[in-house]
Image (cartoon, rainbow, N blue to C red; front, side, top):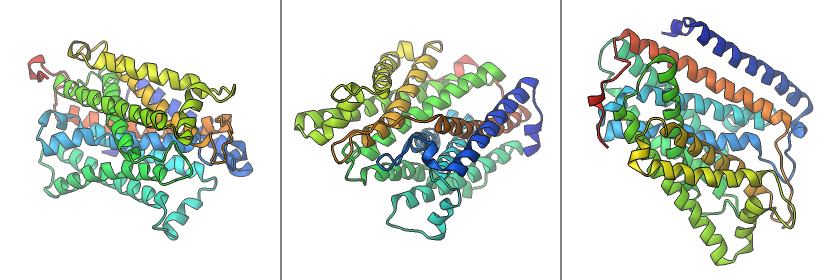
Length: 398
């Protein structure tokens, strides 16, 4: 099936060339980081995590969000989701690869990654985080490729694949739970020291992951004519709505606890993010207020069924939701945790040109993997005669 990635339209080849150009540019920048070290970044002794780990954190949620297709399809036997479940699994593969690459570039020297596996330290949460991510990558690769091969041959997938699917469902919860523990296990950072950090991560994952998948499916329909169908779009957008509502509720709980308790350590990060500190206004403040506006606007468009089922409004609502969760979970989470230091001082972190450039290259690698895998899946669906345009009566009224 791999030969299918070599056949496509001129627009397809142009897209691949663009991604390869971005990757090549990022590789050149990464060589400079290898030569001169992490001093090229905005990181320091007090701010040891930055743009790289921020993107890693968010992309773990995108990868875990694929379970919102798998769980209803296999636990609740909702068959329409099986039509697009392969796209969710391949999206998870691309997201996990990006997560791992962000870990590599954050460590400075790539050979340091091997130390986690050659010299394992079970008391390190980062070790477990890397382990569960690698396991989740293998699970999605085996499940996705096996089911796609079965679809190409017009046969049922082998029975053993169902057991791997069940394992992957619980594994999806574990990868983001462990990431939440990675933050909540650092007692010196008040913004992260909360018992519901893992729950917040899961809630944001289960809205941002499916939201990105829906946006890509809308784009796929425009480019190729493949229609996921209303029986997929409507229930998945409803899942996104509920998950985003829970995500906002959890964040409001943090705000209430910080200010009603009057504990300065919990108040300082929130005040710094949204108002600065004693005249020290930083670039992230505008981003955080943008996230607040986008979060509530997206909910205003998603909650009424009349607006949520409007195919012209839904993509904009999903896009605002995705941007809001990205700002909160990447930029806001890292800066809010690190800027007010345990010594009650403030050190402003700003991503450098080098970090952003390398980050764009990592995103391009993920986009390339997803593009190639989705190309194979689309070709298989065409070959098997699956209709690209679904009849309206097939949609489920939800």
